[in-house]
Length: 118
Image (tube, rainbow, N blue to C red; front, side):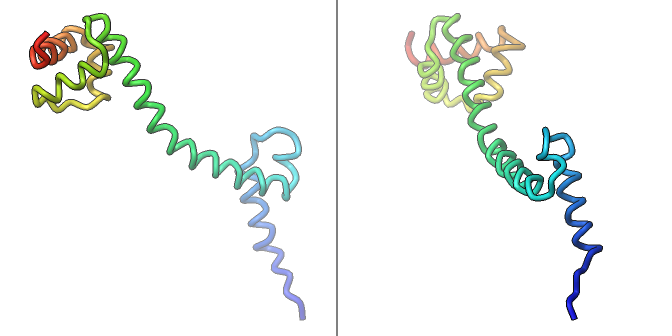
């Protein structure tokens, strides 16, 4: 005797269709297409979480570079000077200071300049 298991099959279909509710066109209505778009969306979400890390690092470096150039240093000179002065501050905090507290950022630039001998 064949077992169809309609309850679980229906539950599984509902799970996929609920996830893709806002998708356009047939992707949100047809089960087969919904299942494909579900797995595709999960793949993009996974990739996005990995890309987010490098995107933020690029953003921080850009912000630091702009603020450092306003003070007469390049980004790589600033980082090298801070390393020579044994100052351990990460790029996220440096970028935050560059945007929200320019006076503190200028102090870090001054420290880097003295360490570089400029």
